[in-house]
Length: 83
Image (cartoon, rainbow, N blue to C red):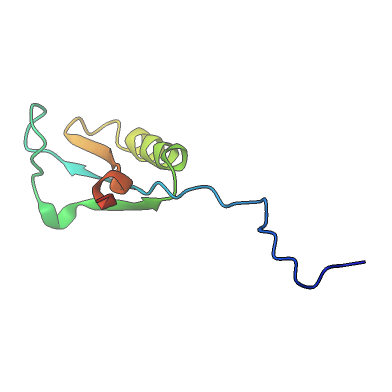
């Protein structure tokens, strides 16, 4: 017999979102992180975890392997959002 007043929480939980931003562009030189033209930054996207961000970063880095000045980065947004 079921208990209509039973409010047991579900045992399945969604994984915690750890947002990561992947972006890149052409640097002015390889010794700094100064972009040549901010209007040409390539924002690849925001990803729910590091693993998916790393896959996107790797794909973009491989696409631009012939451009030595172009670099892509992963930013840990979840660290910036924590108080």
